[in-house]
Image (cartoon, rainbow, N blue to C red):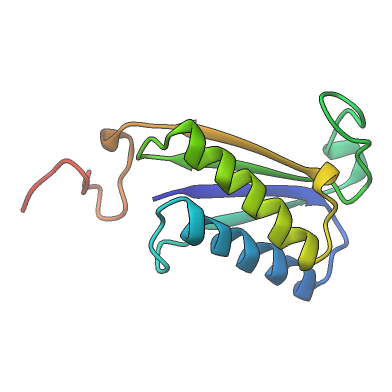
Length: 129
């Protein structure tokens, strides 16, 4: 169950955010072995002084359309799967809502099964009924 925090500068339309969300999830389903109903995302729209990023470090040049995807996952993925996901995501987001590949940054953190509780104070991934 990936959970994704999506950070960007404030001011994008509802349609823009929906396209980001939909195409991000599409890339996850198509390349990252995520079920279609496994969708958990949080948008963080920040003021310019609250989202600090280098415009050229290991990529760029980055514009004010910069988007940072911080993905927490429970099931490890191979390097090949991650690379396919990165490529698919930038392709989809270039199509809609029109984010340049240079403006997309992705970070994946892998946790263990006991690090998740989906509800009711239960560690569903390790506790059996």
